[in-house]
Length: 92
Image (cartoon, rainbow, N blue to C red; front, side):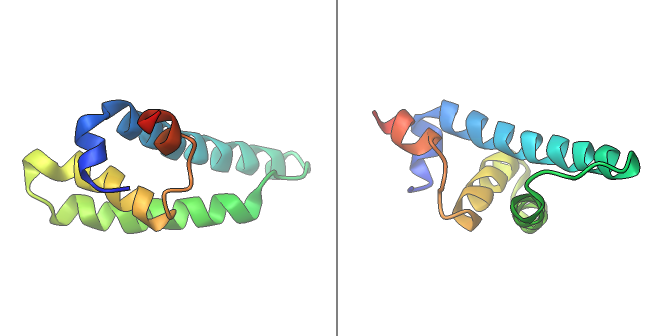
């Protein structure tokens, strides 16, 4: 997905950001589950998502202030090989 898609279709960026938030919530949920002796969910996927979020943070910190969130979301999408429903839905 070209970076310009985030400019043309802001909903793509919003969905990507929500994906990051959901990943962080599932990580917290898993911590609570493990503390209570229950099994965590989607641990492999969450490790990958958190790793990609941390890598995308580098793009945030190295970008000009007016482009930080845009570059952060784009870096996250690129790290995930744009594997999200938001891209085809937004392009439709």
